[in-house]
Image (tube, rainbow, N blue to C red):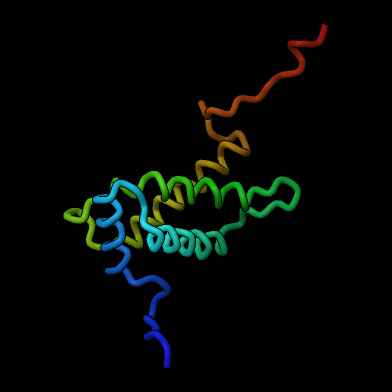
Length: 121
């Protein structure tokens, strides 16, 4: 019959286990990376970042995934009992930060606009 399917697309207990295991190893396991990609895919389906000319959607996806891959070590199993809301929040903040940097809405971002007017003689 195949593998038993769960009600949700990611088993939260398995996600917490993979987070703890990855923290112990010092790098994300392959299963955790696949779960993060699945979280990012399902998260980006619901956001209106799509612009066919500037490809904001792909940049925001990449920024959120990068944040998840670097910030998974901050998961505290004594403080958080569920891993899915924690990882979704990291994805949300990473995608929003990237979108704000691309559209220059965030003051003090690392991306600075270059003014052509000051170089005109």
